[in-house]
Structure formats: structure tokens, C-alpha cells
Amino acid sequence: MSAEEASDAGMRSIEHLLYSAFSLSFSSKEDDLRRRLVVAEEKGDSVAWEQIAHESDATYDQEKAAKLFQTLKRNRTWVTPTLASLDFTAHPEQWSVDDPQLAFVPPSLAKQWRDSFQDASMKERAAWLARQAANDWRLTGELHQAGIPLLAGSDSLDPFVFPGESLHRELEELVRAGLRPSEALRSATAGAAQFLGRESDLGTVEVGKLADLVLLDGSPLENIANTERVKAVIRGGVYLDRAALDQLLSKARSAAASALAK
Image (cartoon, helix red, strand yellow):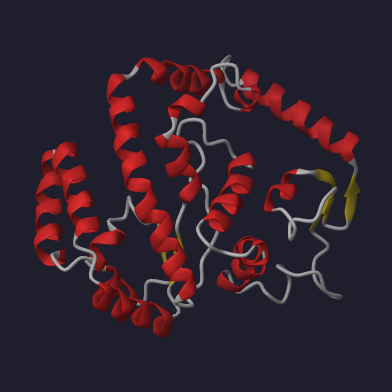
């Protein structure tokens, strides 16, 4: 099923650009590539799958893209690009076996991620993903310029894609793809609330809405990376200062460590 067919059928959101074969919908050879993709997936042929993705990029059709943008916009179909996961996975040279955030995942998963350093197939896939990545950033920018509503999702628990931190990274990648910081923030706040039908309760700072806030030590409108400078959190009206947040992090590390014993 193409992205256009999914949108017309009522699909409210499409997750990923690369992994959902979303980019095939922009290709002048879409029908042929989609048939070949089905065969490749049935056979588990990753080499063929990767070749199809490259052919899709090389046969990008601007008129098809414009038509698809119109369909997505008309149907109010949202898109979650998930750029951070792709960027992480494509650059294993940035991974670290001593990453302090490994303390927040179960030891068995941390070991699995560390072992992936020795996985030759993982390195080959990373090299392919790095070549593919530019296309996803370009498509994200084009979707945004066309007025397609975007959501921030990080696909955490791919190797070294940590819950929490990866969302901050996703916001940075959306800005790199062409969104203004305010627009990237909206994809994770007001936009997310709107998509879930919760805009009367969440998503913006207004009287009468739930008091769920993150207080920062720097403006993310000046630098989107400032979303990581968390000074305090208000959750359900309860104020949690830096000391309280650090205590929660300590409990999280203990919970992750105890997962091995179970």
C-alpha cells in the first residue's frame, strides 16, 4: 500500500520515512519498486531492500511528491520522521561502551548494544544508512514546507538510542532538517496534543490546562539543544527541583540494574 492509499484510507499518521518505505511513494518507479520490495522482504533479502531504497532516491519525481503532499495535507495525515534513530544507527563511531546512559537500560540490553561493536553486518548496515540519511532529512524539510504536520518520535531502544535523551536529539535533527526551533518544539508539545485530541488539556502553557512543564536554564528558541538544560519539572502541579530529579534518576539506575537479577 502506498502512502497516498494509506492516507486516503484514513491512516492518521505515518511513522518513519525510510523503514516504512515511505520514500517509494515519491519515485517514478514506485509500482515496480514496491513489487520488488515485497519479494525482498519475503526472502529476507536485505541487499535487495537496500538497492531498492537507493533506486527510489534516484528516481524522485517532483510532480508525484507534490501530489502526495496535497493528499497528506487534505487528509490531515501526520508524519513522524524519526531522524535521531537513523542518525545514531548510521554512526556507530559515536557510540561508547562507557556511555553513562547505559546505566539506565537493563544490563542484558547494555551488553547486547556493546556486543554490536563487533558485529560486521551492523557496521555494513551503518554505512548504508549513512548514505541514505541525506534523503530523509531532505524529505522531512519538504514535508514541512508543504504544510504536512510533523510529530517528534525517536524510536528509542534501537542501539544507543536512549529513552528521554533521544527525544532531545530528535528535536535537534528536526531543526537540522529545516524546522525553526519553535516548530520543532511544537511537534513534541502542541502538535502532539492536537494529534491525540488533548489540546484542551495539554500542549501549551495556558490557564486551565494541566500543569506539566519543563523549566530550562536556556531558551530553546535560541538554541534547540537548550531543551537538555533541565532545571526543574512541574508534573501534575508538583514542583520537582534538580535535586528531586537527580533522585529519580538514581532510582531509575537502580531499577535498571536490578533487571538482571530477575
